[in-house]
Length: 140
Image (cartoon, rainbow, N blue to C red):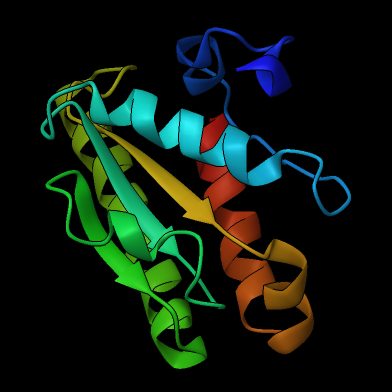
């Protein structure tokens, strides 16, 4: 894994609230994304879950049927609906935590993985406020 010399331990990345992977063609973006996903798959599906958004249907399709994947979308209307569902799910988690007087959620960690983020932002204006809301909820 020479491409990951600065992040040899992907578990370290899993604790970050957001990760943006950018670079030119051939720079190892896909290698890093796959390394992170493989690391997630070493956990039980009830510990780590995936929501996959794959507008080009190329990078994330192979993970669609793993038990950790709770949702996959590749078409724009489905992507928007999935992002809304993710926001609703986060709101429900916070409501449960508030009701129980807890500051930490004790359920599964859910990772939203978006391939070709820039293309998604250009393709539809509906995605931006939903992604912004998810990011705000994750930081809270």
